[in-house]
Structures are given as C-alpha cells and as structure tokens.
Length: 167
Image (cartoon, rainbow, N blue to C red; front, side):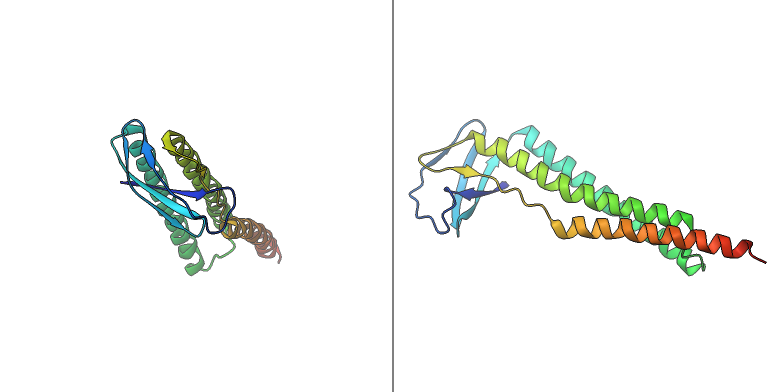
C-alpha cells in the first residue's frame, strides 16, 4: 500500500465533494478521505518503479542518519579526549549541517515528484488533486546553525593552535 498526501480543490478549507475515483494502470484506489482540505489517497500497486523509489529513499535516509550518528560519536570522542576545537570536528560539523540541509530539501522534492507522478495517473471527476510541497524550514535552520557553529569552532581551533605556539 502506498499513501500520497494531496491538497483537494482550489484552496477551499472544507470542501464538500462527491467523489468517484478510478485509477488507471496497475493502481487501485482503496479509500479516499478528506480532512480539512487535505487528504490521503491510499492505493495498492504493483508498480516496480514506485517501490524502487520508496526503497532507495529509505535506504539513502538510513545511511544519512547512520552517518550523522557516526560523526556525532566521533565529535564526542574528541571532546572527551580534551580537544573540542580539533580541525576534524569542524569538518564533521560541516558535514552534518550539509546533510541536514540537503535532506530537508531533497525529501520534500522526492515526495512531491513521486506524488505528482502518481496523481497524474488518477482520474477524478471535477476534483483537482495536487501534492503539497512542504519544506521543513526548521531543519534547514539547524543545518545553517551548524555551519555557523563550525565556523566558530574553526576560529577556536586557530586560537588554540596559536596559543600552543606561544611561549
């Protein structure tokens, strides 16, 4: 079963709709629920590309999360060793910030693209179905904050190396 989030109608908050939906191709519609102008379209499918895209997205997301956890663990080790301003920590923070920002943009773009492809195959009478494009601005801001923090740590690393050279 695959679920596609969508907006229903042309901006109406609580649309009242009479729905007759048919799916073309290998999809069959199980249920169509309307919740305050947004809905879910659930269907069973044997489409290999939809399953492939979902599996790749989950696999890439899992590797990204594991990589971030690995980087956080390495940062923690260097901090516990007494070297919080190590140059490697600066690189690690930058990687984490970039991964967060790329993920915050790539995930909604992928969801929108797949939902757009799926909704183009659904035939409805008198209803406009369109997928939402929801960027998680909070995650993007956290990524930017980590990049700024990495710059601060880079400055701290330079100060620490200058201090170690002072007699």
